[in-house]
Length: 212
Image (cartoon, rainbow, N blue to C red; front, side, top):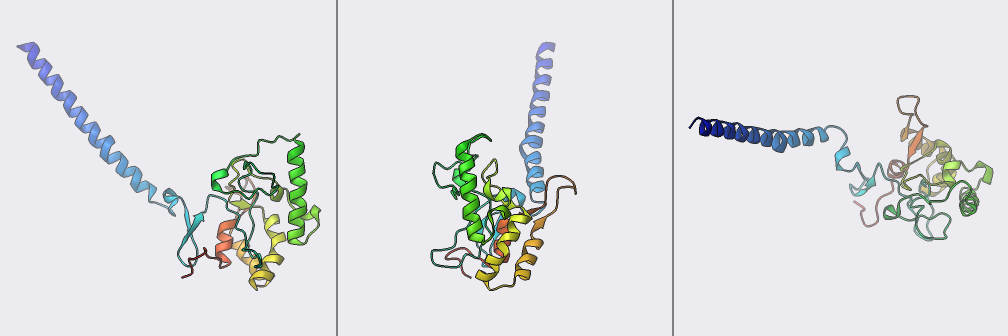
């Protein structure tokens, strides 16, 4: 009889612990995590970026390199090489988000060296500058292949082309770039970065078929 009472008491204790932990870990904890995720600028929702028409055009954390339609002036700020792991012989390898990743080519790779020189020539011609003026980040991809930012130096050489295509002054374009430039993390880590997507939105570009 005494053994049965102890067993029943232990069973009740175990049941209460199970119910309590289910409430705490199954309801309260997920609710708290969900609530915390809603604090801040929508990071938990993928950091969606909207154009001026209100259309979602990408994520502030993922790089895209928009291309001007054929025959139209190129008024976009261009990103680094996107999707550099794409199986293509195109040195710029524009690719897309689903082809992210590094090129798997090491510092001694002749193929990578060739790509870099070709990219340097292409970008220099596009921006009407000397090849020596093309920054390193312009001709190299990030490890993920989806870097959302470029260096201020790369953005700077694109200003004249963007200004001519968008009918803005070079000063206006540079001001937009400056407004979307992030300083070093905590003031000393990394380098200044220009968010390409934010700049293109500020320039007034909208998604195709999304004109409001």
